[in-house]
Amino acid sequence: MKSKTGKVNNRPLLRGLERRATGCRRKQARRKSDEAVSSPTPESLAEDLHVLSDVLREAPYNVVIADQEQRLVFVNRCASETLRRLEEELECRRPDSRGQELVTGSVLRYHNDTNGIQRALRELGRGERHSGRVSPGAFCFHYEIRALFDLRDRRIGYVLHWHDLSSLARVERQVNNLIRLRFPR
Image (cartoon, rainbow, N blue to C red; front, side):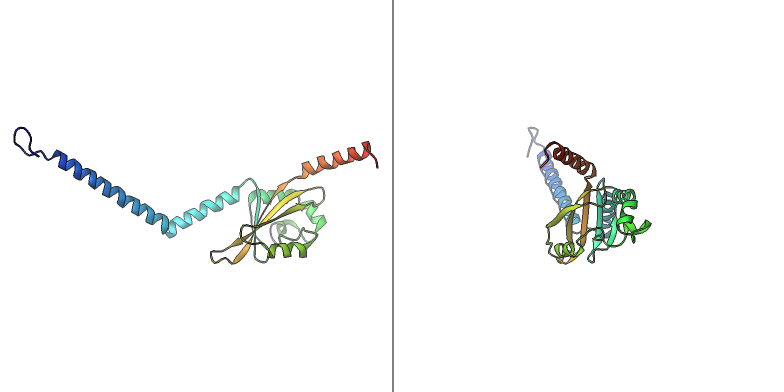
């Protein structure tokens, strides 16, 4: 373009080239970003795994992971503390459960119907869950178990989490006792 003085004005051309170069750089950066997301490096995978394991370990819920044979392979901090609080009651229920054994061994050992729970676990598919209540002594827990699968859809274990309903169960018993006293049959 020529200006009024007759000189060639390259500014619009340069601005256009700059915009085009900026657009190309952005596209290139997006491609690199997409490649990074679609093909993670071993370092990024290790970092992600570390973060996920920290989240699981420090979760404020009782969480345990068992292998395919229902043996505990992971117990988070909250579950470990809960099991320690229950240690005396659990030892009375299962004398083979002493000290460190509370956080090892079979996830099924405190169930009364071990065969029934094993059958239910074998039948769990991806995304399905088995839930129920277990009451060791004065304690009451609502639990939920889900099967874990690998990328090839093979069952590799189970994740179990539970909530302490002991205080709620005590209130339910007290209410039921009051009802029985007030309205005898």
